[in-house]
Length: 161
Image (cartoon, rainbow, N blue to C red; front, side):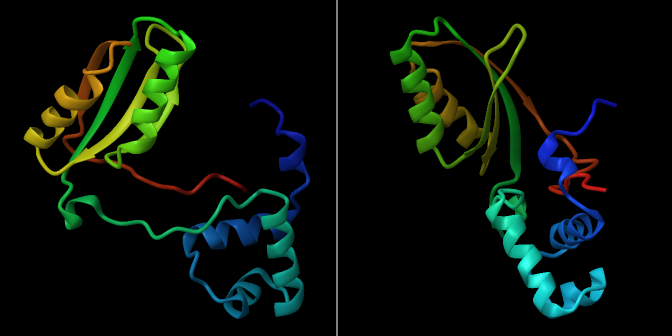
């Protein structure tokens, strides 16, 4: 295993416990968090603020169940561009940022350029997004989509221990 970055090495055991507890339940009260990590509330609050200010905590969010809100289709689309001219990349980036069904976009190494994680209400809705949005961009050479049949594991927790 490669060595941890310097910033990660700056975390002590209590910092890691705080991060683990917050990943398990971001709504935990400071009082309960302090109890679980073995600190009194004031030092726990100071550590939490330091972790936030140092950039270890990107934010707090409520995770929704996509099928429960009418978005049962989860797709991963591998996208290749025709070229990487600044205007082509700008148009692609703009579409990705504007379209709410695109949850993630990663620039990739290898044969393809991007990996998108996309949700949709139906296969028809996905096809509509594909044909009226993504494939309308001149810079897009190809899109290869895989649909999730069943999720075996999903977590947002990073291994901090």
